[in-house]
Image (cartoon, rainbow, N blue to C red):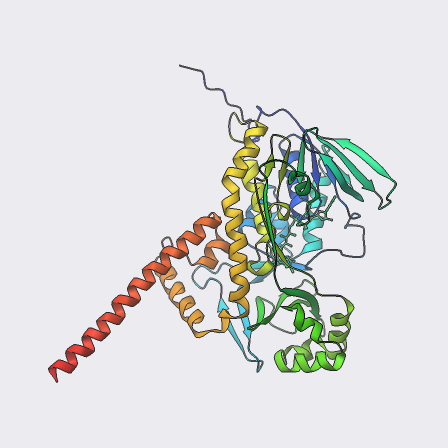
Length: 458
Ligand SMILES: Cc1cc2nc3c(=O)[nH]c(=O)nc-3n(C[C@H](O)[C@H](O)[C@H](O)COP(=O)(O)OP(=O)(O)OC[C@H]3O[C@@H](n4cnc5c(N)ncnc54)[C@H](O)[C@@H]3O)c2cc1C
């Protein structure tokens, strides 16, 4: 009988993989988390970030100011010992607060059975917590203002533009290149030149723009523990609470509608018509200033396959699967990439090449599933949430969930409050739809039979 060799030490570090020189491209939420994980596994990490160090910069260059953190992100943060620190300043959101055109509100709790909730976290703060934690590791080096310009993945060589100066180029090498450089990933661009790499992207016809509901007398102007939604069929507005008692408001609508609003007068007319209750909260002056300050941003969904190249490079986060933001899962899914990849890396007798391949095998279908779900929620949030059928379905789901919590987990809950693979969340929903259809059929046919019987008797 062959002797069993334990290749994982007491700290979970896989001894069968020698320490690698790892270059992480992108120091956003996923890159800084990946750096921590690689360092904890004993590898030598160089993190290259295009922007300056956000911890010392005044200007926040990011996409959304705050984000909804849910189970998958929490789990990934817990793995590196940061969940409590992040949650200590996060604001729980227990459900959706829907605002109708007349300004009347109604609440749909996310989870009335077990009271699970989303957490609103500041993007900058979260990124700072992750970067600060990485600073404590002697085997992590940060290189800010380093933009990856080109790479030879096979050779592990990279060329960076430094300090935003075209002329100043720096070269570096690594055993493994990790692309955490977001939706427009330069690493992915290099990968797309390799044989067998599949890629698709889709821009949606809606753009988004951020506004602000400021604090008033140092208080929130709306109940803080909800994700506020103003669903208006073709357009939508949402608001998430911030630590400083303001709300970040995201206005989402077709580019052609944005283009149609050219003057402050047109803007105020539009807002008074569709979002009348929000106007006094934002304030007309601030609304005009914020609306015309910047252009609406594009939103896109990106799928690719594979997520790795030989034993040389891997994509994580938006670089691998950017999605429209309507399920609040982009960051959560990117963080979950780390949980999965590092659990694979800790498997006994794992090699780096095998780990990259296994990651692609186990992750691609789930990444594609959440991209599809995010697209589906794009319709649900702006349109379906206010429909009677949606509310009925939500009620039915909640009732069944209450009675059979291990058996009937509604789609939103399985995505946001469990780590169930995304593709299984979809399969689950399809199975639930089938059951409900059968129940409806039985109820309706029984009703018809009953009425028919009554008719015959009389
Ligand atoms: C409006 C909006 C709202 C959202 N809300 C949520 C939410 O509520 N919950 C949620 O989970 N997700 C949300 N998301 C998605 C979330 O923002 C992303 O999924 C998340 O930021 C992905 O993290 P990342 O680190 O992979 O990429 P990014 O955050 O894009 O970070 C990439 C980093 O790489 C750097 N970089 C880029 N190119 C290079 C280069 N060539 N060289 C070096 N560095 C480079 C960039 O400067 C950046 O710091 C939202 C997105 C949007 C647009």
